[in-house]
View 1 (cartoon, protein in one colour):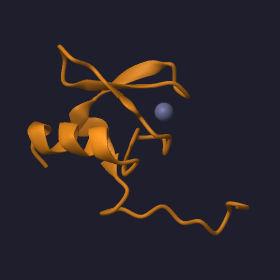
View 2 (cartoon, helix red, strand yellow; view 1 turned 45 degrees about the horizontal axis):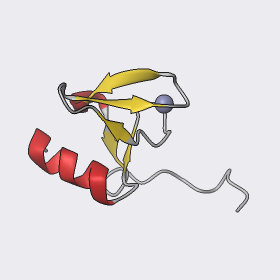
View 3 (cartoon, rainbow, N blue to C red; view 1 turned 180 degrees about the horizontal axis):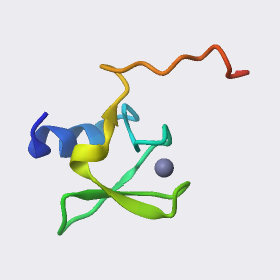
Length: 63
Ligand SMILES: [Zn+2]
């Protein structure tokens, strides 16, 4: 996934998550990173995961 596509997905959906399964919701304007509030750090775009392509099991989640 190229970074332009990733940035669009960050803006439009909750698909993109940090490498630890959180939702990294704050793409940086000047860097190719997204900030994760749960981790309290920024992750480079190439470390982010697309949940639509790698679905997270909901078996352990109580919704
Ligand atoms: Zn995180």
